[in-house]
Image (tube, rainbow, N blue to C red):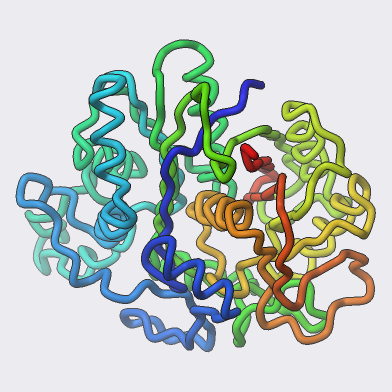
Length: 397
């Protein structure tokens, strides 16, 4: 595939708003997971909550979109001059030639949860100010993003569980390759809600501690929330050495089980293989792997088998979910931005909270930050139902 340029990118999560705060947290090995005190949730678990989301006020013209997910999206869009960069791209390409591709899992479902508390006691009807289309609906976040950025091109939401905002890079690339658009806003937004917290708890997948990916005593995930965005453009003739490029994409669907990965990581391995193939790279060309690494026993074991089959045990790798929590549909986008920061700043981020690596998982897992030149990185995102996506990013220089 022809590389694409991440001309601008930004991320907001529990470890910070925007690139500078995110980079500082990674450098300081400072996580954002805290005991859950979200809304009425009564569970012994940790979450990665973004502070200040409830105080965000949407523009009056977009008030119909008001929900936690779109407030988080707005908080993300106003960081790092991202909205201004998109406005400049509109002058370059035209508003109809820029697409919007957003990944999310539950979108604005919290708004429906809140509406159920206000059902009409006599009829059971939802309150009159509740709007499913502009809040709970999965498309809401792409519709809001396109409206806020004043774009008029195609808009798409990918909702494939935890691979959602990795797969949007593939969707955008295909539409750009087909000549339907010239540039794309891609990203992921997922916010805390009762459905995910109680749902994952009912599956026995949440930990009572801050999650510990690849630890010998790992016992589940910590759910987080995030908004991450990137502006994809064709690669110009001249680029700075620290420009970040999307080099390869691999997608697969092993359909092994509704909520458990293939025990040998079959689909994960296929996605990584395809990413290498589309980038024209060998496994030895990858300097760092951002693992999906959810900290469940089965996920980390299956991903290890897949990685080891392709890369052996020497490639440095880590899961940044120990810092941010598992941001579900936003994870691919958030970790793409973390990979971009790793490339630009020569930083391989450590996996937090992991005290003793599981000896049954033979990987070169980073317990401490490593500073070195980084040329190419691979990022994994795997979702329920066996929907897998691997992305390869590289530094132009």
